[in-house]
Image (cartoon, rainbow, N blue to C red; front, side):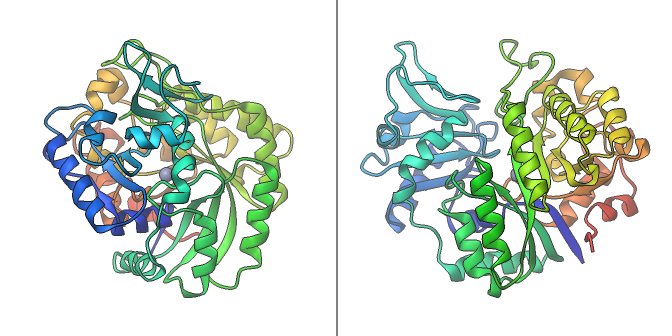
Length: 410
Ligand SMILES: [Zn+2]
């Protein structure tokens, strides 16, 4: 029986019950699914797993292409990774975004040659739009959420570290995730250690308090933050530019002072700290902050790096000597094999997802799916950790090592 160390339970339920754009052949099919979904549900339309690498056009749509199928209701379509989204014109106008938009810290609105927002939202720009349309989002019913979570039991999962957000609404169409999770806690089909995405210490403390006073299968586990974005969206923060986009090295989302304040707040509440870091630059920056926190007395076993995808050799050594945990998602390999080489180039491809190097260096490791980004089925992750299709085979794990990644903490 397995534990998934990184799963977004309500976003997953939202995906199962909502609009899934995965495996659409082209943008025409994407738009047909959007308009078909609009006929079935009320309120704002939230879609997931838009895949610009999978459609024949090999690009994201823009606002006008969505407007052509739905213009009278706000539409927000999330890219596969969740770090990029595309909005229609109504959604943009609800958020007050049009020509020469104010660019948020840690994110951006794409604009055309006239300075008008194209509808493509990167990183923190997504929350600007999603929070504006959150009141119009009608989430899935309690029954369908419980059914979706019950389905992961059938895959062998009995518990998870579940990531839920407060204050940063909707990813897969479930507004107020913590509220919903606590309401359903007594009926949950599995135990959930809850990592909370919260914007400030007060909201984190409220969330911890709320979880502690909830009867049922939820436990407060700590705070989750982001240091960068994704390879797919060219927003993972790299030391050197992207091989297929020399103009960018990705997006830094880490504010070290805010991070330290939040990390200390989480540990004071008895919680852990988990930070998303994919690119080698993001990982180095996170380790700088972790080193400082450990120097001030933080317990390294409570500090996790989520994904830890691209690491330099010194970063692996540093993780080992600090005793910081790498929380890895081997199923990413299976879905990124076709295009990741374009982004990273040969040298970086040889050292991405260095599972064996991490283990051999002595870095504590746990495994997860990041569902709904990937399937929550742990077999897919364990197989990918062993087989590494399309990736450096010398970083393969043995079957036992792969199983150990998904072994419950208790
Ligand atoms: Zn995640």
